[in-house]
Image (cartoon, rainbow over all chains, first blue to last red):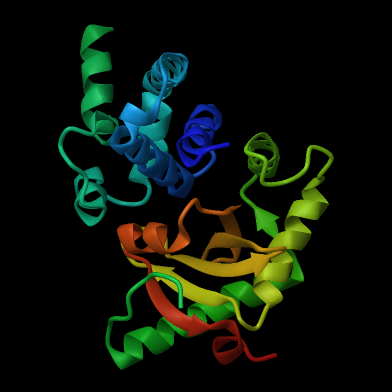
Length: 103
Length: 137
């Protein structure tokens, strides 16, 4: 299994557990960021799997947000991790806010 | 030495070391989880392939205890949340695990980060020192 395949498997499996611990949610966000950097290495089937996993991520956004905010302000967590603003998965507060507005 | 930064006044660091040692002693005597959380953690470890499918909660807790009893394990403090968290990193069977717990000696999680040094740096964990230097039995 290549490194990018391993990261994809990690993300697909990890996103199924949104409420285990905020510390693991942060690891999941790191892994999604690593996948973004290496997205060009994914074939169409792998990209489809990533899209499905992102769908699960969005479904679980409220639980992911609740878990991670126990560890501090998300804006500070993003700052410490030097997150680019293009990495939407790190903006859980905005995703949750947007979902609440749509409901 | 893996990840983390060293900072804080001498008194502050000494207080953190003592608090970490106290929590580690509690966990060494018994690995305790928040009510109902242990099953979810064990299930995730199996799905992620970190533990074999036949592993039990006792197996998971034994691994955690081994990391906490290893003199070469490293102890960290996470200074950014309302809850005071401590962490211990240590190798078991060539896998580096990170055990995270509260100052009350209750488990938060234990998992092998994809890249420990990167993980600790990005979170801002503060390195307190080596297990053998901090916890004296």
